[in-house]
Length: 201
Image (tube, rainbow, N blue to C red; front, top):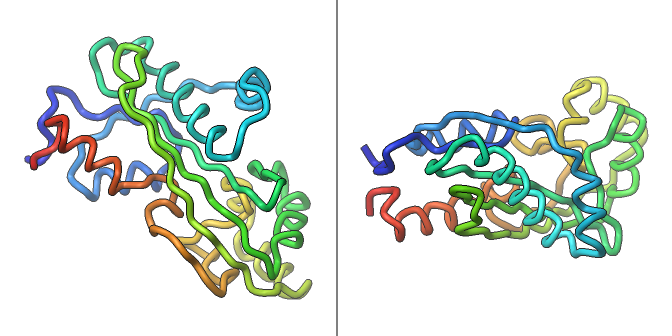
């Protein structure tokens, strides 16, 4: 087995795609999530860049879970979307999703994907990667068709899309690592885990 730690990696995330990415790479995973008020955590952090916000939230999620799991490795993750000086969060409903897509149509935005590894509430490693995403111009008729086909699932991701599903139809150019776009930069994560002996080198 590639995984060398005594216990499975604890994933502090509801994301099914993050869990699938790890398990597909041979990492045993246990999911444990504590619901946090992310906007309150951001407010306490003060004015931060989208990258810093993603790292802050990834750390907070992992630390909250690690409290009840002494000695275990806990992985937290978060993703933010930056469009110029604006930062988007997950749309609360279909109308908000449509508005996000209308604003991003024909434009380039950045996805900032961060993770943090915590043990005994101490952050032992964190990292953030950025991908640049350029949407093609989206007509009102296309937005109607896309939102009808994708349904409420668009509200599960910032930007109202999931690239691994129907979201691929929104884009004309993508610059960045595929795993970063999906919400978990695996290359730097596994590089750290190998260096520390948690994964076979």
